[in-house]
Length: 74
Image (cartoon, rainbow, N blue to C red; front, side, top):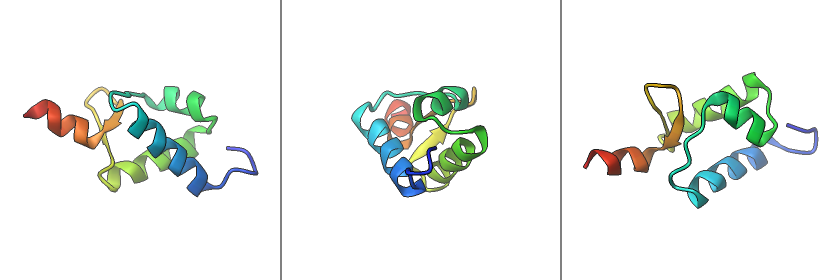
């Protein structure tokens, strides 16, 4: 994350990417590369989105939109 990016900006970008691509499935290293974040910042951001029930962490450690998990279980 650059000095010009705020955490809110990155959060909106991450949510936007998952909303634009409903089937998006990313591991922590993939997310770090995609958004240019260090491991701690990326882990914290994705963890907050999991806590907010926006994302779900799969058994193999990938992150997907929570509504996609519910839809696949029906």
